[in-house]
Length: 214
Image (cartoon, rainbow, N blue to C red; front, side, top):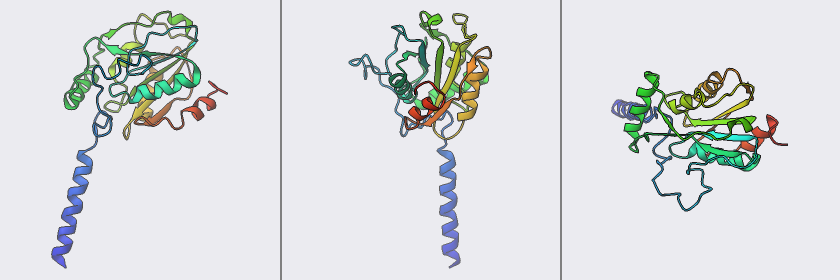
């Protein structure tokens, strides 16, 4: 009986250790969120995995940064429901496709306040009164490309309505949403939205709640 109890305790201890060891530091679970493969979406210009230049006369912009396209999926849902235009925030130097290498780069940027250089800019930013800003949670915070975008001298967010959204694996939702708010102190803000992975359940109800759609 004692041997059985000891064995049971060893098994439970090992399980607990593994569960903690599998915690994802940048909150994008490689087991369920595979990195985008170059060329996967080139045949579909409307796929949010592709960079989008805002066009048309919409006054709603959905600007988002994504690596595995979880955030892109939510951004596309917002665009479909609001008629807003998509703009994908991208860095000049892409993040490593290897998951571990990507986490290391992301951590170095965050710890050293490195703002990576972005490729491209939003044209006619002045036409957008409402700007959704979305990203995944990396190391419990917004990835540094979001900092680069919101702090860019190219844009003036004063008086605009900024609405944050994010995707996450387990934690960091509130801190990431608050970071986007803190980086746009001269803007108006509406309640943000966070969801796990590519789950878009709740997006429509959220948009109705904050008065973006009826």
